[in-house]
Image 1 (tube, helix red, strand yellow):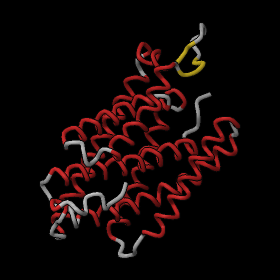
Image 2 (cartoon, one colour; image 1 turned 120 degrees about the vertical axis):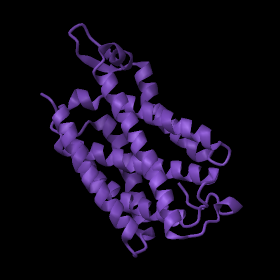
Image 3 (cartoon, one colour; image 1 turned 90 degrees about the vertical axis):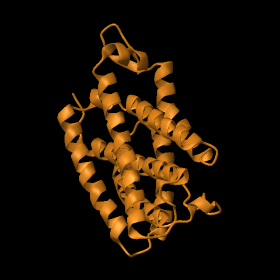
Image 4 (cartoon, helix red, strand yellow; image 1 turned 180 degrees about the vertical axis):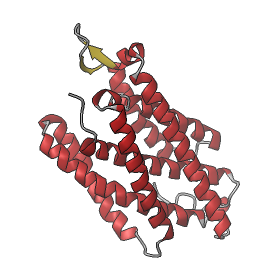
Length: 247
């Protein structure tokens, strides 16, 4: 997400005062929290409802999951399409349309994450969630309060993120537990740093955007999407490291 998308739009000229920044950031975190709640509810609902889970996974006669169904693959890939749609059509979509797309993204993302309740115990998921929240909150505060420009760090972390994506795709074929472990460790570092970087970038954006406008709403939604992805990916990386799979 680029923070100069609306630089030529007069409605994107803000006052830069503290109250405007706080209002913008409050909206960002409100949207993010809403998305996390929606995702959590949908993941739990599908994971605990066999009839719904059957739509996503193929099950053999013994009741064991043998793979994803066609719908399961669609659900897994759909969030990526919605992210690209929000980013590519941000100038064309209305604030309401973007909000509905964001809600749909959170719901489908939650459905795609229902597998974690199959692989990990609920107690482990809750424990790692609170660990993630603590790490995310600490880095968010650091990103908001630091006077150091994190732009260079963000560029390095973005390269690391690309590396993680490539390594993860390769490991889909290798099925290496060691490689998965290494990817998870690097992922924790990358998404921890990206949290601070994204929060600082959003703070700077909040100094420019005019509060109360549709532009402000859309930029807050894009900011919430960015932080949501940081949180979810950090959570998944920590869960792989400390969750302890069911036997």
